[in-house]
Image (cartoon, rainbow, N blue to C red; front, side, top):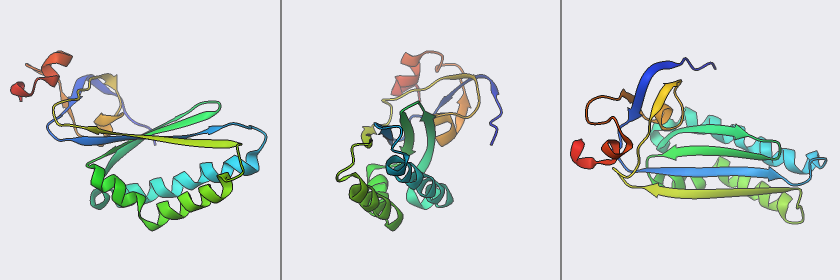
Length: 160
């Protein structure tokens, strides 16, 4: 799906706490496709489920980055509770169980994740002539106006 560029400068409202979840995999042995491809293929079904039930799961959105050996997905969630609840759901548990079985004696692929709990008012963003991306696709973008011109102003909760 093509994302249309928004002309101008935009930011996102930072009055709510969010969770940033970074997850990815690294292909350690490129030619061992039969070992790393099943790990890679587990993610699309989960992402479809997240977008299909976005509101009730507390999932805000995601961005994907693909490198030669390493993939990274940045996800935005409403809360840690929402993220942890999803981790216990059937589709995720099945994928995790499958990965653990395949990875037990398999160093062809590695996975990683990091979770950041970001408090309201302690994050800011700016997008200039960009399509919906990152937080601006996970939360409604707002034009940058008076009192939100600089990063310091966007981080200053007394300006809200």
